[in-house]
Image 1: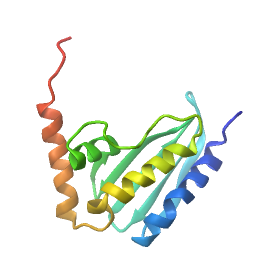
Image 2 (image 1 turned 60 degrees about the vertical axis):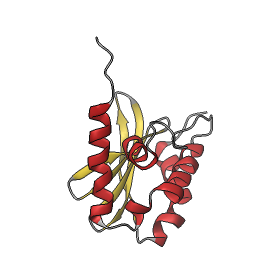
Image 3 (image 1 turned 135 degrees about the horizontal axis):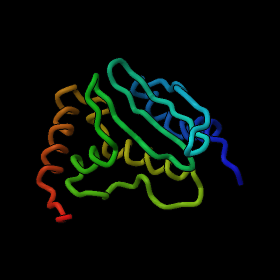
Image 4 (image 1 turned 45 degrees about the horizontal axis):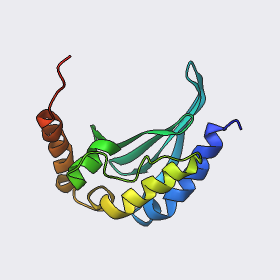
Length: 142
């Protein structure tokens, strides 16, 4: 089965939109096309200076939170919130590309209060905490 990234991203955004719309976020498809990696689509839920950026190729890939010019990946945001790396539901493992959106929705509903309706300072502390967690992470000698 060939996936149409535009269609999957639009359908996936519908899975997220009821939750995000409750907090004033509106979805915008930003770009789509084909590149050396194949067909892709990207879009974002935006409210004021906050943005949840989504990128889809053969699956939901990059999920990035923005507050103004600062950004944090979903992985790092959840690491900061949960205190444990890779403890969130997203991305999960499934043959259904929409399951990644369902998993992301669960993470947003359960753990993303600071992004959805917290103050800028509350959200930015995750940006700072994730940097500290990454710096403290042991490095494997190469």
